[in-house]
Length: 219
Image (cartoon, rainbow, N blue to C red; front, side, top):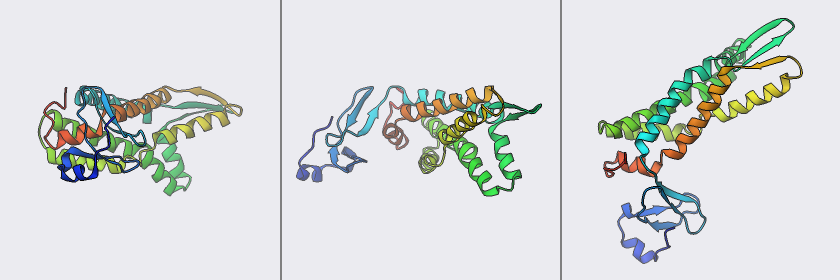
């Protein structure tokens, strides 16, 4: 945990040696970190940044896993509904089409963007960022993609859609026979992989690596 430094001393330090807490705005001198260490704000306890091991390779593995899970999570049946002799397979995509065909066009567009389009765009941005670092090419495009990714973070709402699926299952279980499909397990796996990716892909290390300062980003 970094110690507060006298304001007069801070004023004389270069900007790349300073870090501000995102929660309480306390300005601190960056402490040197070893692998798997993290810096915490001494005032509020917020994690300022971390130095995680082998960030780029681990993040690449998770991004590729998430991309492989994307298609089955969205196009395989999440649940099978049996009612009055009728059977229907419900997927994320069929839910979007159902809303659109029910004349709820705006809601269908919002669901499509938040549950399918934006999560995919986020993964593609992360992939391009990591490849630009791993292959040491196109760092300027990597910076652009990472900025786009940060603007999209609040719009990808897989967890909200997942909660909607759980609510639907609870409400329908007494009205019809439900069978959980493989798509639900893929969807849950995709959600967990993305959460894990958020933890592993240390923003501080990625920004430093994209700026060309960190030659050990893949360590």
